Amino acid sequence: MVKKPRPLVELVATGRYLPERILTNQDLERMVDTSDEWIRERTGIRERRIAGPDEGAAFMGAEAARRAMAKAGVEPGEVDILVVSTATPDRWLPSTACDIQALIGASNAMAFDISAACPGWLFGLSVAEGYIAAGRGEIALVVATEKMSAIIDWEDRATCVLFGDGAGAGVLRRTSGDRGILSSHHKSDGTLANLLYRPAGGALVPMTHEVLDRKDHFVKMAGREVFKNAVRSMAEGADLALSRAGLTGADIDLLVPHQANLRIIDATAKYAGIPQEKVYVNVDRYGNMSSASIPVALDEALERKVVGPGSLVLAVAFGAGFTWSGMTLRL
Ligand code: COA
Image (cartoon, rainbow, N blue to C red; front, side, top):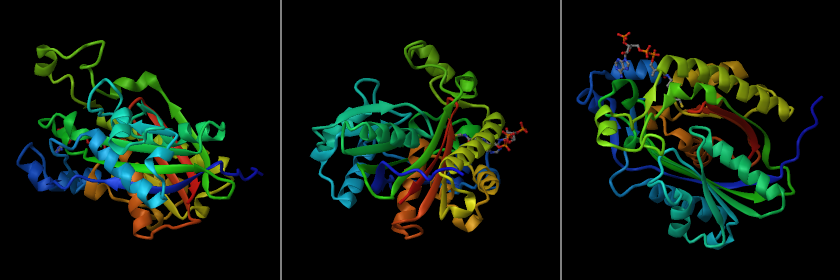
């Protein structure tokens, strides 16, 4: 029998920020050769949020962070470590974390970005957990912020219908109680990178007129392959996170999956033995917000009292890299 793990850090509070502008499937019908019916049937998405020109990754992340800190009763100066997950940094240098640090005034924090695509917030929670567990700090702020609309080819119907913009954040604190992160499983497979990637615009193939003309700075995706890998990897994430915590799907109060596609969510829930009424879904309203999907979903679930203090949550995610994660938490 697995010894029940004792949490080292608790998730004290969460926050989210979503841009106001809504882009519906009907709007997309006027932009590319697609239909509301196709998008809903294949993905479950009805609409997504699109950030305005002044709503960059740092701005959205800072808003989500402020809301999480306010709920946690934590002052910016108390934050020891600020980890930001983003695939859409406002600029290459410095990190989005440093920009968020300046915006919120977390002047005592060590701030840095991580690049782990859709599971990035869960990767970030584990990095912060390890830092706190090692005794290097007491309070962590983990932010996920994604302006996916900036890296999408709005003429490519296979990708532009899938993504949306938004940010989520969580405050972590050392605990001696029984609430917090119970278990996690994180994995990557870089050999499959080219199934979901941006071919150019980085240091190897810098931005040139040719890159722009070829649209090689936008996201390219082999949808069917990504789908298959997502289903397999999210099942692994669920499986190992549950077993490491000595739990089964029956113990879980809420599954908070990465919100990429309703069919992937359904397959994950079925595999983990979690009934539909215990699965949080908002992909219909926001599309795939990459690493912001899970903290936004968790924040909504808490606000709507779908879960509360003491609830057991399983979070699972999959993304570019490939990268994937499973995590169990007692809220
Ligand atoms: N509207 C209408 N038709 C579309 C379309 C759109 N927006 N996008 C693609 N199609 C077409 C394709 O061109 C293809 O046509 P063809 O058969 O004539 O070539 C057909 O629909 C089927 O395309 P396919 O890619 O096989 O569809 P699918 O059932 O695999 O669904 C995805 C496509 C993208 C929804 C699905 O593959 C998926 O969700 N993949 C995972 C994506 C993901 O989650 N990525 C992020 C991971 S974090």
